[in-house]
Image (cartoon, rainbow, N blue to C red; front, top):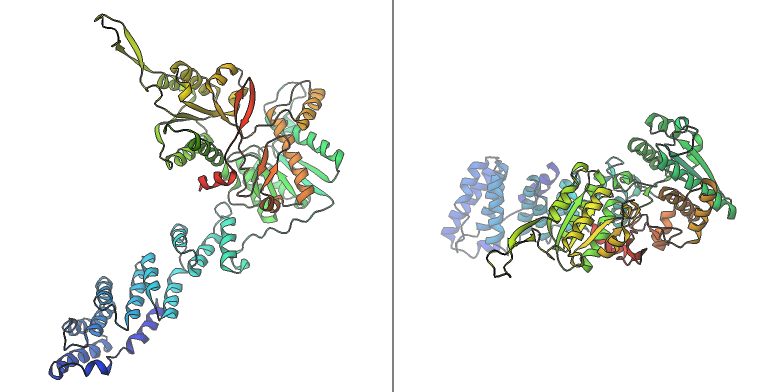
Length: 599
């Protein structure tokens, strides 16, 4: 504050009443006003501010014989400020600006109003008065710089930046605040955008610069998965961690397949055993520094350790299974093979808002954290489009019957069409027919699926009530394809694999030959992921995200495709339904539209 007050003090000492004004008034009255003004100035310079206020107060009124009104009012406000009464000072400076809008020294009032508002942490008002200054631009910039740059409240700075996106002081403070956050909190993409837009020194803010993605002769992919090799029993049949072994089996088969055409990728495999200490030891191995991409780990703490390692050494790391955006955090080198729950929610919401006219909706979700994230992200988006959420309910495993009891609930009324007073009662739905436009179920649980399907079928208004479920419903043993097709259920299918497909056929035949059974979904995920990485390394080099920013969309191998232009999860989320007992993909909004909804 000292710098700005000193500058303003220099201004006020130069405020003198112009001689021309003195010549225009009655001399007897003038002498009285002049004595009062001189007395006030003397008291002010002696730092007797309360006495100065009393002296100036009598000559603040507008009068034909008083050429001192503006100056006396200004010094009254300044004396109040020096006396510690900033509220009175602010009110008086405001009064001066309103009573004397053409005063030649008005910029000085605006400087002090900015100063006082900044001191009171009312930064929007402070900037408002800085912007009203017409002549003292350097002084205004100095005051704003002095107060804005030390701010480290990111929420406040974000709001300021949203309103004043061209202001360098606000941008600098925001960039500094982001740069001081931890890896998990830091939004590197946003930080880079601010630094580039305002021409700041990237080194000052420790921004992450993704190096040029050079094409190499050979690449290394490191696989860090909790394979639990030492605990596996040498017997046929499913293991407790079969889904992880399936992913690895798919990775291995894809690596062998891709290497037949172009042998330019080395595969390193490490067993993290769900153990943070073991994972930390693996990350200390020198050969891992040479990796171009890391697949895994899967569990939270090992995943955090690997993410920090990847960030420090600028190595891309990709999680094959998770839909949790926290896995990515704010690490620009961390990716999800599939979409995050937020992306799935935005995709479904975009489809629904463009196809459903009845805006009454019901949302059910399961017990997992990601079910909750999916449901609440979805609710937030569609409510912005004026949808009315009639029910939004978490369903625990032991009480899935509650879904049927709610959706299919009835009460009895007498049949009014029958004139017989002893006519029978009829059942009427509690939730009126055709009153709900759609039901969104954020869960893969079979018990929730069966209760929703049974309830919608029992209601009999499925043609007017769209159900959106999970792709795993299609794999349930209890699934009745005929009923599901008749009800027109749509499924969010992040792991939908296009069929027929030559690559899938090759995988199926190879897997059948080796294991006498069809490949599971996780085998297919591992297979497709590794094929994608082989292709990306060969075409784009170590950092496929650089190419993603240019090419936007990468066509799929077994999956429909990959879209990483707007973020580090795959923004492509197929929606599917049953037609003639076949799973078919339905048109979905463009990925850019999905990102707009998420924001």
